[in-house]
Length: 83
Image (cartoon, rainbow, N blue to C red):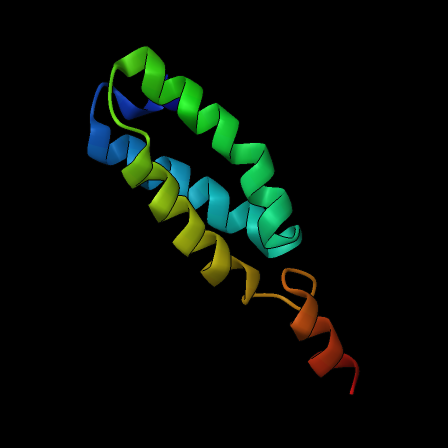
């Protein structure tokens, strides 16, 4: 669905993948989110014939940012929130 939604634009695909990662990371742990999203990203990039590294770096950054958005997204937030 993301490939169809991107309409062939690599920039739009990057935005969609990073948004998906940030939203998922707000409700799951950062590492769990990346374990779920990274294989999909690598497969999509292989299909399109592009280098997956820029996409993965963007996802890692937004996974960290998304994880800090909620108490459950990042384990240190749980400790701080329960104090």
